[in-house]
Every structure is written in structure tokens, then in C-alpha cells.
Image (cartoon, rainbow, N blue to C red):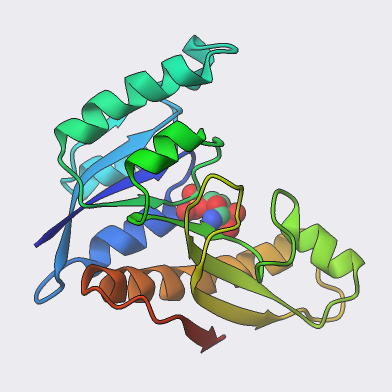
Length: 198
Ligand code: GRF
């Protein structure tokens, strides 16, 4: 049974879907949920789902990314995770941190990578006049939003879409994609999948 740790920064809607998916004959179970924000609403959801949780406030380590990550690593490693899922985690991790989990750290990014790494992905896709947007689950490497793609879901951009309406449509599809990718990854299957919006 693979042990899965999940890092969040906010509402944790992807974390909730990942946790809810790990039941029955699923080859993985959630062992810890961590956040860089003690006020993250997702922490209450993790508790409600009976998943141990912790928070390390990154604001307590101004200009000290290494110090923050050292504090983050302690409860994280204590949970002995096999797989680390970043789910709406908004802190950039140093190469040192990533290398500790190299090959077993996943992230979901709200664009069709390699397009639009970084922030404000939906606004950028709309402004570019793209017909489609979407989300990608990828292996995390030291370069931001750049690792091998494990899964993507495509979502149409509709006339009149705002970044908010598009973000909501993409988020609903993230909730389908990430659990499917995690299940395959936990079974050792890294063949990429492409979903179309339901
Ligand atoms: C969303 O913008 C999502 O696209 C991205 O992180 C943000 C929050 O996700 N992955 P969550 O609700 O905290 O999972």
C-alpha cells in the first residue's frame, strides 16, 4: 500500500478528491496533509476526512526558503510518504527539496503544459485567443512546471469566458484527472493519459 502525502495552500479541493479516491482496492492511502498556511481551509477538510494534518507558516521564515523547507520536511518525512502530491500548493520548492522526492512528487498545474507555466494561466489562454485550456499533472523536477507529463485534460474556452468561469470549468476537470493519474502512478504506470472534458 503506497503512502501518499499531500501539500496544499488553500481550499484543497484537489486534495479532497485525491483522499476520497484512495479507498477499496486503490493501491494507495493518504497519510498526511500539510500546508504552508495555517489558515488554509483545506486543513479542516483533511481533519473531517480523518487524515492527519499539519501547517508550517512560510511567513515565519521570511527570506529563508531553506529554513521553511527544513520545518516542512520534519512532519512530512515522519509520515514516511512513498508519493508526494502537490495540490494547489503555491510555494516554489528548492531543487534540494525536490531531489529528496525525485521521481515520486506530482503536481497539478491549471494549463495544458508546456503552455503557460507559472501563474494566471487562464487569463493568458483567453488573451491568446486559445480554443482550449485545461490542466496537467506532471512529475516535479527542479524547473518550475516542467517535469514529464503524466496526464492532461482539455477544456473548451467558451465565448464570453472570464478567467473565473474558465478556472471553475478547469477545476472540475482537475478533480477527475488527478485521482486517475495518482491511481496509475501508485501502480507503477507512468504512461500519460489524456482526458476530454466530461
Ligand atoms: C486551483 O487554481 C487549481 O487550478 C490549482 O490550484 C488552485 C487551488 O486548487 N491546481 P485547490 O482547490 O486548493 O486544490
